[in-house]
Length: 466
Ligand SMILES: [Fe+2]
Image: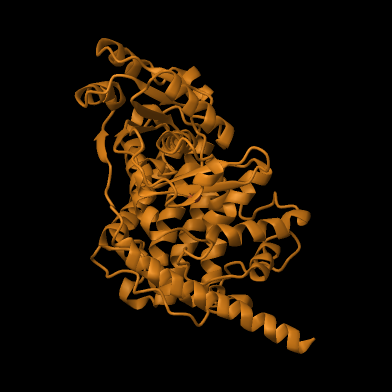
């Protein structure tokens, strides 16, 4: 029995080492991919000017991919009016749902072909943008099913020119290379990931997000924060661009999310949140995500909660569970985002551990102020194995998370967050709270590269995850 356990343990550790070797190979390959950042039009009312840009590119028949609520709310009215005066014949596919399915993608692609469309405008939340990307992938690869296109680098052909007009500020889908699609039959979500999926043009019009309710604003803003933080602490694949984008996201969220939560009509702050989502998308699309975002996916799939809400709940717990492996990165974020409260002891007097803990506490305070629960109370005991399994699959071999967890450790982590378990909560003694959990001992594989050099860098509210 003891022998079996020892064998199991060493197999798990060997698997983690293999993951690290794969990640270093992927890192080398990353330099060969055509990384870019979409062109951006920004400012209040900018979505009305989009048809001008479409027309200038000699495109005449866009398929507009959106959801019923966005289409019903009349948010597209200004854009459609300009499109008419520029003689664009728009075809509207408004059947994208909050968790877009393979069937929706097939239907959208059929509509594109039947109407002879020549480009795609994704207008809506991250889900609508994901649906539009996947429709583009189906147009590029008509012989393959959505399932066959899920995974990495399965499209590898140009998709129709894609314009993205986000009506939320969180998913960052407008600047990522992924699209998350749910398989209708099994309800399992999986991403299509390929640089060809990144939109060519993005419109950041804060007027479109004004009617986003406070809860959705909070969830999508925290989703952007989670993406930025997880990308930053991953380190391995990041370049100066991703690090700068992540830091910029944290600064923008910190300065604007509570402001917009209190007053949704603050257009200037709304614009800043859109910028934050854009930056976080660009950061994580190369830097990768971690267990908070990965575990939020099964939670939203199983319990119908929004992805951003689930990742916000999980984020501080995941960060704290990494222990010493992320102290340096979180302390850097704390410094780079100038989070020291005026009037308190100077930064120089705080240890790296204290800064990291202060950063996590700031996230917890944000959650509290945004009325987001401390723990994932929705989790049912009978789902724990499934959540652990899907989270492990979601992270896969490629995500350079600071500490790799096997399925058993993920299970233990989920259980530790449920009612009745002893919570690894922040205590009055910060020293005690950031210590690695028993199961979170940083594994012995190659360490991620130094993560940064300081100074370097509802439909409308429907969300999605990456
Ligand atoms: Fe996310």
